[in-house]
Amino acid sequence: MNETLAVEPPREPADHPAEGVPTPSRWSRFKARLRHADTTPKPLAPAVETPRQPPAPEVRDTPATVSQTSVARRTAVVLAILLAAVIAVAFRGSWTSQSDAARAAHFDPTGAFLYPFAPDGLIVLALVGAVVLRHKFGPRLYCLTVVVLFTITSYVVNHLHGMGTFVMVGDGEDAILVKELPGEVVGLIAGQLVGSIAFGSHILMHVFRHLFPAALDGAVRTIAAPATVHAGPQNGPGHPADGVPADPEAEREERKAWAAITVRMLFDNGIKPKRKLLADQYGISERQVSYVIADVERERETGADEEPPAHAVGRTAGAPSVPVLAGAGSVNGHVPGGGN
Image (cartoon, rainbow, N blue to C red; front, side):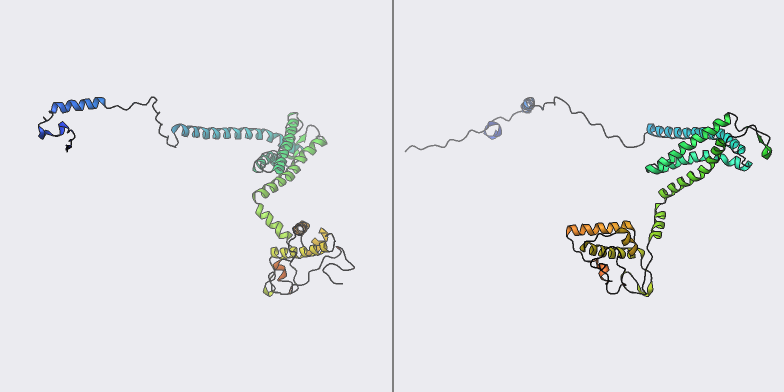
């Protein structure tokens, strides 16, 4: 039999110095490292470098911004002063014309001195009112109309003054007109004064209604609240004990609830409800009656339950009988919901 001899794998000569293989010198190892470094591929540089993002600027007021802001403020202040000076000069020039016109129309010296405040002052105040009421078309248009109207009248007075219409001889109450004033001019002078009172008061009311709406609305609600009707001290949702008057809002809602019941009954009997009669009978306004009728019609269209509200049902047994709409219509000689 042939015996197969195992063949040993070849050994690496450099790792086995014990078998007579010489150890590489330091110079040989250094050259091997150099060859390894030369053959190692170097990473390629990118063809296009990504641009570096500049750092986000800090959000703060720069000296240029501060300078612009201060310049704008100084410019606004200077412009306001110049405009105020122009208005003052124009007012002073018109003052003489208006005052002389008042003296020519037989105003006393004090009244003639204060007279220019009425027409020329109203022009300025009406402009201020137009700015305050800038979001309300009607009042703003009214203020601008007053401005235009009194600007025209003031121009006419200044024109007549320049033509020598109001020249007087003498001082004080002994002053005499050089020529008689026409009736139209006297009417213009008097109209400026009376018109300033009327138009100025109207503008004042518009401004008050705009600045203080809650106060005026509260006054209207107090006036429009229906009077409380009692048959005596009662206990219930709408009538506290010991005869204390009920809340006007709750009383009005209760009246609207009874009106709604009557409207349903009228519709059930084929009768068209009348707003004025319902308003008179239940002490509510015709607008509220219209809302009640619209609610009942919508309720009937949608097929909702037609029972009275819960707060009205709770008072049905103990509440006094509210007069049912009389004269709204009858079916077989009976008023709907009433007696024979």
